[in-house]
Length: 75
Image (cartoon, rainbow, N blue to C red; front, side, top):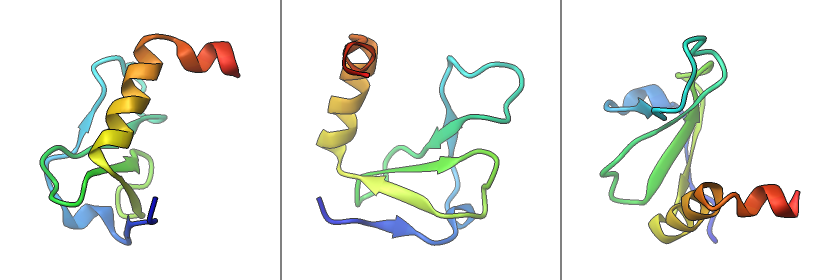
């Protein structure tokens, strides 16, 4: 995978948090849908910091593994 980052994630709009995020809103990842390079992911505590852009297929595989609790079995 080629590393791809966006130095200042605040330059993009439309970020969303998981529906599973708690009310504290201070320890969340945010994702941005519809980006042409893949799926940007940023830390909600640092909205002006960098975002890492994952290829769509890699992100989909990650989400599927989380939903299947596969990551918990390997951790």
